[in-house]
Length: 542
RNA sequence: GUGCCCGUAGCUCAAUGGAUAGAGCGCUGGACUCCGGAUCCAGAGGCUGUGGGUUCAACUCCCACCGGGCACGCCA
Image (cartoon, rainbow, N blue to C red; front, side, top):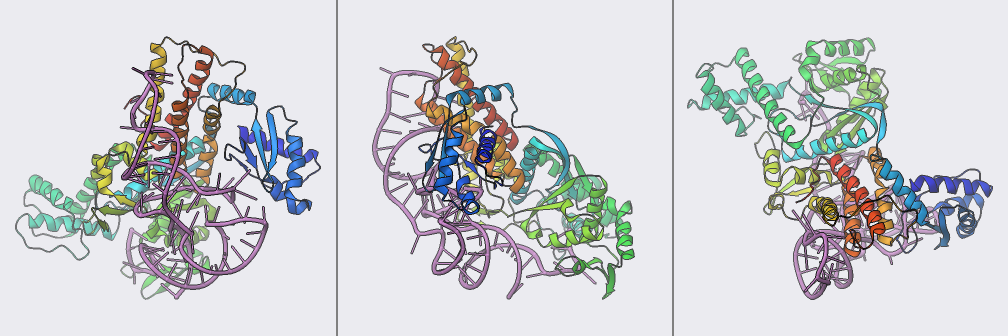
């Protein structure tokens, strides 16, 4: 709000000074001793105007001071302009935000899809998956708030070798229950969860599948494992408060002929060739990468091929843009997918891949490598159980996705103040409590006064509350959801400082109390909304 | 070897190219018999991996190197 206002004033003032082409400049909230806001525009103009930054700043500041709402604009340092706003405009901003409860929301105009959490359904979600799931969900919530109509989708890799391997591993476990000494297949899944599943089959079907490994058994065991896995994965998602709009089956792309259609299109475009008995796609025609196999020499299709079909399908569904969230291990897949899109005549901008780094787990003093296949992992369920949903979600959201975060399991289990989620929630609970107190004191909350002398702590609170929209916008640009947790922590801190210094509900001074209570209301709204965007609860008391 | 990500306080992490690099935890010492002490205030703790460069200004951008991670499959 203030930013827009200042931006316009600076542009207008410069125009009055005869400056035509105005560079993209910044408005920042500087150290409070300098002012309310500051701008660097004078530096950026120095070269084109062939004048010293301070000189430009000084004439600009004189223009700015003509604005009603600017109390002062002064030149500082090598050419910053520090601006102090009037109390009236602060009051005005408060009114506006109070009238528009969801002032940070933008009407949706763009149809986008986010695909994330698309792990192989070959084992329970691990803590590693937790990061992607929460990250994806929070991104979706933020995009939804800023002008996007968002669909969440999870791709289910229910076709192919891994699922066959999973079924076979389950069949082996099942046989082992009958005392058969059959070893797990090489690369088989070693996790305990398959033993539990095998017991279930034994209970229900007895020895029906004993010793017989054929296509029927393959089908049965693969499907059984798959369905069980999906079911338990959905339970976990449910617990975490994540809801997908659609679960998309890889297999369906084979059944409905999309995969063959892709082959046909590519063949017609002369983008396929045979080598060593396999069928290759000319990735190198489009990007600097090696050609890739789409059909193996045994006739089966690769994951790459179905993924091309999948993205073709997404395109046909009419999204303006689709986002894929992948772990860093899939980075190599990006150029190939872009090549495939181009081959199909789809703009490469249609697909945006967001990469995040993986989570390292610290157990005791050891850093553990997680592997679903080897069965060495800590499940997301265990974490949720130990740390709770709020802490789990907040924790995953609070790291820059590019960072290789270290997850200390023992710490998470302690439920200590280590997690800043409590800090933010406490501010919310505290404000709620103030309103209870105000009621007990029979304090009448009237309307905002027409004029008011703001304390620095009060102005700080208003300024930071107004920042929410631009924080959310930055996130839609660089996907760093931790900007939101940083913001909420700063907001909570600003509030706590304010609270410690000033009495809010004071029957002796109803006018001031009204203003401060309104200020609390604003703060509480934004904290609640911010936490809501993170999927974290905002308790009235704790 | 090639490409991408990371390297910031003892630990975990912040910092749209801006002024004195910040939080939390841990450590030391404090806080109103008025609204929640899960809070607040103060202190100790840093050659932002190393060396160059661009810029009025570099943790941030560019180059080289060092260290860690990931990827370079007829795996997904």
